[in-house]
Amino acid sequence: MQPQQLLAVLASGETLSGSRLAAEAGITRAAIWKQVEALRQRGVPIESAGAAGYRLPWAIQMLEDSAVRAALPAAVARRLGALEVHWEIDSTSSELQRRGNAAADLSIIMAETQTAGRGRRGRSWLSPPGLNIYLSCLKRFEAGFAALSGLSLATGVIVLRALHALGVDGARLKWPNDVLAGGGKLAGILVELSGEYQGPCAAVIGIGLNVRLTDALREQAGQPAYDLATLVQGAPPDRNAVAAALITSLVDGLAQFEREGFGAFLDDYAEHDALRGVPLRVSGALGELDGIGAGIDIRGALQLQTAAGLCGIDSAEVTVRRA
Ligand code: BTN
Figure 1 (cartoon, protein in one colour):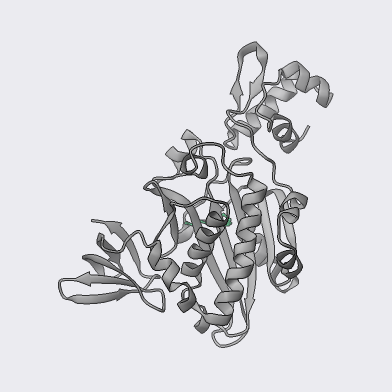
Figure 2: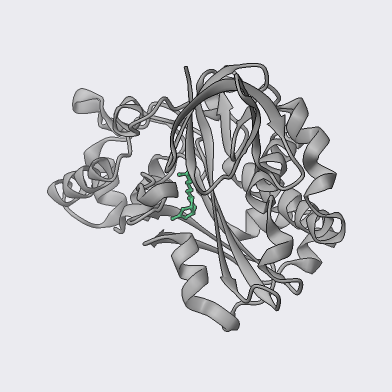
């Protein structure tokens, strides 16, 4: 029995005895225990219910490409390149980069678990199976890097629109592109560009969305984290539906970005800007600067009202903290 098969069997949330699992899989109870331990090592919160067996604390849905595809509007499905769901991969974004020119425009790669998930600023992105969404999308642009400023901020708006389509409101944006809720990080976005400054180029847009966090994951995250289950105060939407909403919003939003540029996202960003009017400390290569968040400009630069006047802060150079 592979770990993904065991997880699929446990997905209902029912308690299943070791002997029943062993009989169904045609392996020993010791072998089942080994697989349970392997999944626990990956961060899956399998509980031992004494002699009764093993269970998950809640039901989960395994990701399936057919279920994601079935939940996509036909017009979106037609525009997609590849749509792949892997059990395990180092990083969905690294995989799209490795594909290079072989990957069609608007190709989507998702994985149940990543062994080397990457975050911004060289951080890792913990990616246990069965709990969250790890999704990357390749988008090609003809206009070159110069036209792409604001793309990562626009992606934050795209994630919020997907949540809204799922009936989930209450998330906000922390510049440049963290999606926050309840004071913690609900989703992270990593946009990586390749190609030419003034010619054809490609963006690999990676999104990690917390659907169900465990206590261990919260502790290891290194920053306050939040999940969809807490935001909706109950069972979160099916992960396949969450993935389909993200993909739909990406396909529509990236077309809008290509057509109209970042300006088309400014109002939505402003409406959900968690930093506007908030005292901030901006730390960057040039030292620290205190001020009040004053929105963002058309390039996506943070506007900081300081004692010396309004400063534009470029995303590549700074970190932002509440003072
Ligand atoms: C951040 O640090 O806020 C960005 C996190 C981005 C994580 C996602 S998960 C899918 C994709 N694959 C990766 O390795 N990283 C991104």
